Length: 187
Image 1: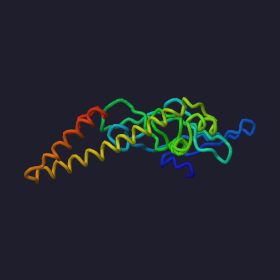
Image 2: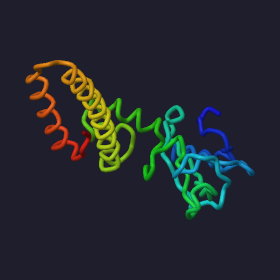
Image 3: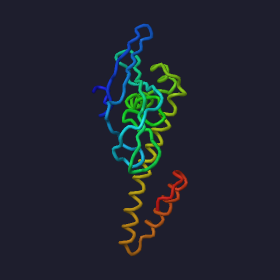
Image 4: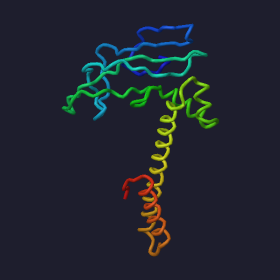
């Protein structure tokens, strides 16, 4: 429960290695559980499980903590496709870290260089850069969404006004900026 794994998961056992100062938590799915299909979002039964994966989690006191588990693959009758690996709520896809660990790392990176954060948490800095890049990309997407909403509002205002050349100029230039920076066509 404290790990916030979500329904359908259980902790099988925990190993503590005092010499390495590491805590290993082994999890598995609860028999008969269903999970959200990654394609359509419907609940689907477990088809099988993938290979064991390991995610670095927040430290338990001064001990590095790792979650070990095999992600289930679901077969969704709605999608009629091949089995798909679920997306756990505690980790991003293709990340070796829990979302809680990543959030903690981002907070540290706001206050100090990546190399110092890496030394502090006993990770190599090259494993932390992808976390930072993902966080920046997410922030950009949120900013683009906000700018898009501003554009829609401005376009609505322009349509209501009789002579709004300034709005036209702003709309055109913000759209060009978004197209160049985000490489997407939003209008």
